[in-house]
Image (tube, rainbow, N blue to C red; front, side, top):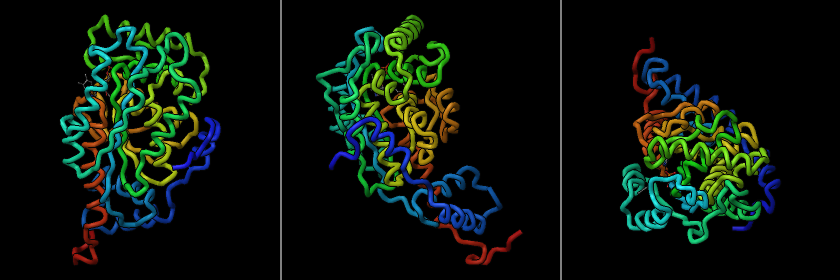
Length: 336
Ligand SMILES: Cc1cc2ncn([C@H]3O[C@H](COP(=O)(O)O)[C@@H](O)[C@H]3O)c2cc1C
Ligand SMILES: O=C(O)c1cccnc1
């Protein structure tokens, strides 16, 4: 795959010039939905999801046959500050677990008929501790964006991006705080299960990070606080937009990565739905800032793309109803 961009500013112009939904498909799908054998709006948000999906695929009655789950893994220098309940080695150990089919995301991807790819990003070289300066240089950020970009199968018809990176709830909290402001304490949470003192430490670490990295350009924020896996998710979500592939966002970390795109280019996440509301306390605040209403809320706080993978079932079901149901005329059912 040749590079689609050679600088961060070129990446931004890719976002600016990315396609929008097909308006005719949206109108026709809306009209089709109105003829299906059910009372108006009786399928609730499933109807909105189906029309949204149809408009991005440019088809009135699309099918979902080839979902892809991509897991990116990265290691974070900021773990030196003791921000996670687990050691950084767990990132690489979980990559092995993904490869052997033993993680939650393996079961969820299989359940919903998605293929799964895993990309471990330079795990032996953690990013820099962002309390001392940017986690990544612009070139490192660009390289991770490119890995995410290249990881998307152009033939896929629904994308989930997930992550594994011990310490990355702190990274995501710093990104969210830098993008949207407010007190660090309103953006941090328990992550893998730190206690109250651990949560307070995370606030301090985010505060130190914001002081050490003052550029508030959204892509500079991504490089300053993101791990490679966070940046790669942003690259994959941007690629999906260019290919008109709908995306289901996962939890707090995935949403923080995506938020950098939306802040760089308003509307950059129009091809995304929020799969779920994570139990990480700031996730709902982040989703609200992005005007995204989660499909599920099951008290999950795992990451790995797990909440989004569950929502593949919802999106598939919505599209199956939309494209498979009979119209009143076809079924000979009387309209009200
Ligand atoms: C065994 C295990 C499996 C995981 N799968 C996802 N995460 C999740 O937890 C990490 C973020 O939490 P924190 O910021 O507290 O480190 C990420 O790796 C995320 O994907 C896991 C964490 C663990 C321990
Ligand atoms: O919301 C998430 O994605 C999340 C929360 C806690 C730990 N890992 C991931």
